Amino acid sequence: MKKKNVFVEGAITPDFIANSIAKHQTKTTIGAHDIFLGQVRADEIDGKTVAAIEYTAYEEMANTKFDEIREATFEKFDLTCMHIYHSLGTVKAGEICLFVFVSSPRRKQAIKALEHLVEVIKAESPIFGKEIFEDETHQWKVNS
Amino acid sequence: MLITIKYFGMLTELTKQHQETLNTPDAVMTIQDLELLITAKYPALKNTTYNIAQNQKIGNKQQQLNNGDELAFLPPFAGG
Image 1 (cartoon, each protein chain N blue to C red):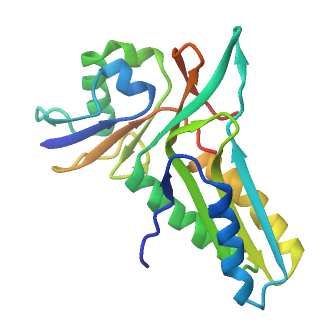
Image 2 (cartoon, chains in turn yellow, red):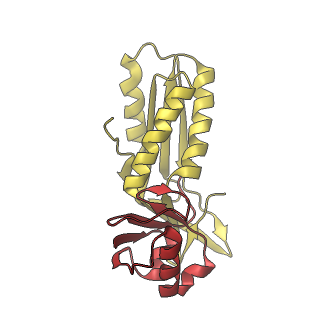
């Protein structure tokens, strides 16, 4: 199977997301889409505010892992399509860093598959985030 | 053996490295042996949390090393 590249440089734009939705209008066996968008939060930590997150990844391992996740999710749920995009590099607070898009003939499978996918992506993909504060100091993010 | 070692996230700051290749002594046979070598070289790693992937798979530290392996030291994940 050809490896897909999940990573995009910088934030995922609303235009990119809108185009992805538009591309599925020809696939008329689909009856339900579900979309998850991860957005960078301006957390306040010890009086300092997060201005951006700089993402890095062990890209080869992550792309292999995403293939495995995709394959396992297709086996588990009745899905027509599945797309995963994650940012690398700097994403400012308020911008989108993760876009997960699943499509199915029926809504229940789409909703269940999406929740499963987002949890697995967060737990298993070797992606690292440096939270950059407004004063340009930083700390390393850990998923909770 | 020649082993390539990669560091990610905060570990790049603690080791001041992204990648290095080590020609390991014969006594270094398992992932755990290599980990001891690396933590001796970079003591700051001892106080931090990480997993080690061998050729992109996180596994048992008793696994044997092979010439040409790629080992990656991975701090906690933070995707999404």
